[in-house]
Structure formats: structure tokens, C-alpha cells
Image (cartoon, rainbow, N blue to C red; front, top):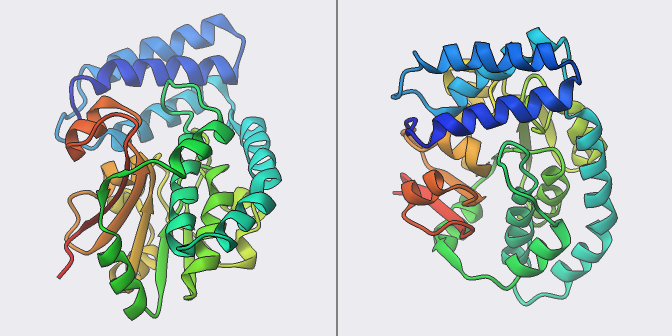
Length: 282
């Protein structure tokens, strides 16, 4: 997905928000804004937004000298999600369609997105999404491909969301490899976060190699690329992964909540709609 003009003020908002979390030093925050503003003047609009985000977040780390500014926030998100896990597991067990309920719960976790300037309440969002209609609903294609799959590659997104991913993985009934970011970026999941969420109990954990807030294939390591090419089913969580992979030439299932107007317009849905979208299904 290309970069739109609406993305530019969002880049500045993300830079300010992250710098403010990383440091209270006003001079460093101003330096972040100066540097990012200069960078934005020359960004290629044909690039995906996360490719620009990759450069921005690395600059923020350099200037503030804080490697993982969202670390404590991620811990709190995971703790809250883990506290909800037993009740959500019961919801799945008592539902008429366990797999679909698990998909809804996994998508509900996608609201824990600190790259988007929106407040969220995970409990309220869960209640809403468990009864909300899908704007795009390629569920039959998903079930068909899952039934044929021997290996599933699951692309994680944010750290708190990974707890909800675990609930879905437990319902897939297939060997799963769970891929996370290579280094901390926004509140996205890295290996340490995935272990805290308990994902190592249900999946093989790998780093994609991507340092961006998305799966950008040009940034990924060879091991991940091989798994991406050869997996029977690829599940991609979140907006960033959609931005990075919407033009790939293999089948992918995207699960997300459209939290910004650019993503909503690109998907031809409304803001806050939930999506289970397939591409390249034959």
C-alpha cells in the first residue's frame, strides 16, 4: 500500500507521541520533530507507510537514546489481556462456532494500537466486536485453506494483542509459526513479549527480521522469507502488516480493525469496521 497525503501529519503525531513517552527533555523532543519534519519532505510516496515508519522510529531511538519507549506500556497491555484470557476461553468453548469466535477475539485485540492516535478500552471493544458484523468476511475461504494446511505462518502485530492471537492459534489445530518484529518498534510484539503472552506454549516463535512496524519483505531475514513462501496458510494481523503485504503475490488472510480513514478507504470499508480479507485465493 502506498503512502497517502493523510499519512504525513500522522507521521508527525507518531513522532511527537513516541518522543514524549521516551523522554521529558524538551530539546530532544524538538530535535525529533525537526529531523522527522526534514525527512518527510523527501519521503517517496510510493513507499508503504511502515517503510517510512521504520526510519522515523530508528531516528527517535537515536535522538532520545531510548531503545524501547513503550516497554512498560506493553507489559501493562499484556497483563490486562492475560487477565481476560480465562473468560475469553470460556466464550470460545461455549460458542456455536469456536473458530469464528476466536477470530473475532483476535481481531478485538487489534485495537491495542499505539501507532494510532485513538483511545481504546479493550473490554468495551471486545463486547462490540463479538457481535459486530464483518465488512469483509472471507471466512469460507479461510476455513477451506485451513483444512488443507499443514503449516500455518501467523504474523503478529502488537504485544497485548498476542494474548488474543494465542486463543485463535489454540483453535486452528495445526502447527503454527508465530513471527514478530526483530526489534522494539511502537508497541509491536518482539520475542520477549510473545513469551510473556505464553505464545511459546502454542507456536514456534521467530523474528521476521523486520525493524519496521510491519512485515516488510525487503527487511525480513532469509528464514522468514522461506517460511512466508512455503507456508500453506498465512495469517496477517493488523494494519501495519496489511500496509506492508497488501500487494504480495501469494495468498494471505488479513485480520484487522480499520482504525484510520486511509486504511478504511483502501479496503473500501468504514472506519472501525472489522475485516477478514483474503488475497490471491485460487
